[in-house]
Amino acid sequence: MISPTNPPASSEAGGLQAAFDAALRSIAGLASVDEVLQVIVDRVRPLVGAEYAALGINDPKGRIERFITSGMDDETRRRIGPLPEGHGLLGLIIRENRSFRIADINVDPHRYGFPPNHPPMASFLGVPIAVNGVSLGRLYLTNKIGAAEFSAADQALVETFALHAGIALDNARLHEQLQRLAVVDERERISKDLHDGIIQNLYAVGLSLEDVPDLMEADRPDAEARVERAIDSIHLAIQDIRNFIFGLRPGLLEGASLAAGLTALVDEYRHNTMIDIDLELPDPVPNPSPEVTGHLLTIVGESLSNIVRHSRASRASIDVQPATAGTGYILRIDDNGIGFDPDRAGRLGHQGLANTRDRVGRIGATMKLDSGPGMGTRIVITVPAT
Ligand SMILES: Nc1ncnc2c1ncn2[C@@H]1O[C@H](COP(=O)(O)OP(=O)(O)OP(=O)(O)O)[C@@H](O)[C@H]1O
Ligand SMILES: [Mg+2]
Image 1: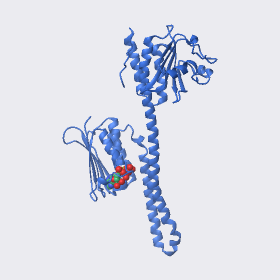
Image 2: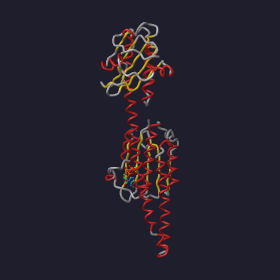
Image 3: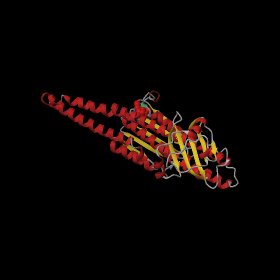
Image 4: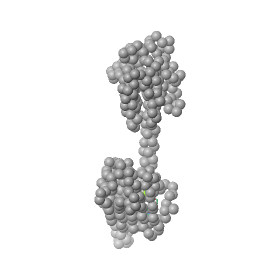
């Protein structure tokens, strides 16, 4: 966030600056566009002592798409009727894209007139909100309390506020967009995983059972063996589905400490697989920030899922130890399975290891992956102390 370029200049600057800073802080951390919009209007109104404030968001053609108000109760808003359409003064401000300060809009030549039931408004301040030259909307303030009109200092203050509001709004929009994309990605991954894994397995089970009725007479032992294999396969499919559902519930580990999260993960895999999984934790267990913990638990979750899906291992271990040199700690994930050639693992559609490397980088850790056909797999992650 950039610092205010136009700090409030009046003599009561100290209190005003504090109110200004508090207003900025309240919009900075919000993630949803709706929240940001409402907090912007609610905060700007007392900042300049206006009776009413509104925030008009325009669509790319400049038409008012949303109009968020502050200082007006629901009943008054309802009685005013539909959104302003951008005639008269509001339209002029949208077209000219600059600030307007007007002593009395009732005598302004551009006025279009208020609809019936609109509360009386006289003094007016309108300021555009733009980010990188792209107009997002406008702030409107009316009826300066305790003075006949808004001052040049009020205008400067709202302009600075609008600069920050634009950035917060843009961030919130990007954040919402990213979340929508993440949901689409996740849906694609789920359907692909279901299709390639569980559905194919169940399909094969169905095929293998098709001629069992005939076999019952012709070759009963073979028929019985097939039914038994089918039962085993269905059990495996159930395990797969359980693992899959577990993988879809990242919330389960949310907020957990490293020790609790690792224990929960290992327990879940112990219950749902035949693999003997060992967990070794030092005393005291490192307790990194929630962000680092989240990354480490996701890494271990992905590694365990790789072990279950690809390694054919009978044993695996998760081991946390203080680092031998310097501060920090080491997380080791081992299995005694078939191993693989890491140089050939980065094929299209295989995201797990790439994501793991990315997470390792993001927490400032380093990672060593040791594997090869027939030798099992070992991942060693060295995490610096924070
Ligand atoms: N512990 C392991 N034992 C044997 N092979 C492994 C192990 N971990 C990974 N692999 C091999 O490395 C490949 C890449 O792993 P990665 O996690 O990147 O992708 P994936 O598991 O196939 O798919 P995704 O994780 O995107 O669902 C796997 O397909 C598998 O062949
Ligand atoms: Mg994987």
